[in-house]
Length: 621
Image (cartoon, rainbow, N blue to C red; front, top):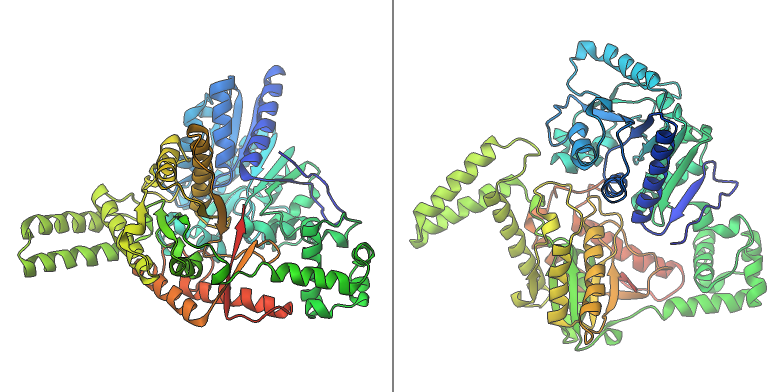
């Protein structure tokens, strides 16, 4: 594992960049364990400030492992959680109280009396007294030794929304619209997200002796740059951490992407001009100056701190031609794509295949490749309840018209409608409803690939166990998941596999599915000496495309091919108009795809390369 701890003059907070989010979990958990053990030797309690959300789960799983396998004891640990929704019953599936006990406390030997989580059930007229008491409890414990934080897209830490002051303490706060929207997936709709929360204040957080902020994924890159390199401002609470001498940010490669030292290191210091860095610098210069690559001059390079690049290559013409040709060589039309190969497209959800790579799939079909599309999860939690009502009503009407088993179908309809009528927001669906939602998505997936010219036989529905929680939050990838993927690999013996490499997926399923494929490939090679490891092509999901500087292959899509791709996306009717988990983008998936593919082609046009209608990008591992 390589770790970069270099802090530039622009970075006002130390930032540790690691290759993968799992590395963050191990680093931070090890630091917590070190503190717990050292305080125990001093016969003192270790006071931990803890956070919730998807990012800290890896830390908690590693702490649980250390407790189980290494004897790490939490007997003398005192914990204070950052926040809780208000109002929020402790037993609710959405409560942070339940989250902490399910994901950490129930698996370690911490004393229940030492656990402090803001109470979302305090009567409103008692909230002021309650939050004052929470502050006193922290002080009585001796203050927080180690505070764990995440960061929201608005830069909030805890629930300290824009406008939170540096002197703010634990309090009841109104939640920002962006924060509520980010939480919408967990609550199955923004309308169900509480409008308030109890949170530690900025001053409370800054009172900790040591602070670790964790961030992963491309969608956090912009706010990490703002918090680390920007001025302290009341509208971005995380910037106040610049005043704390014991704060460290731990970010993965994706979340660090916008930091100056990562994005444009030549603006800071002398650099070693690798092929990859040269490509990025010339593309950046072209876009910054608004000139095509072949029109860049020596003066452009000098004015934008790239004289050392010219010194290495001799002249602007030399480096311009090198990069122009390198980018041009990455463009692959149908004639340069695989022909008559065995291919598996791994699709995390039942629509990622057509959303992300519908264009290349059509070309691969025409090139007579043997393609299988492996849908790794059912995607059933992303089907609205009203779609279930519509489909069971359809079944009853069909049964009556065609003299099918009307009684059993009608009975099923009654059970389903009764369950849905009594269901509360966020409740886990009954097995029967889950199955109906799964079948809805399977039928849509088959219709989607048929639009691209494949047969229904090309679909493989893996229904991996990790996804089958019925909740937004999933289990970790386990041996059972890997075994299913491995068996498909051994049966199909693919020469090429397509895998989702998207790190902005808001619910993390793409990342987990990628892990399952990687582990399955390793195990297949280890278990079967005749298994030949396939070439791996990574595609992106609905949120972002690979930058042209990172892409191995750029695949042009004609107007007709883009239209066909969008028609395939339309087959996923349960996800059209208003998807349950749209992220921060209001557009429908087909609209995002249309813009993304056209924008990639337009970018190449700006750089002075050939003009195409649309384009998909892939990274070959």
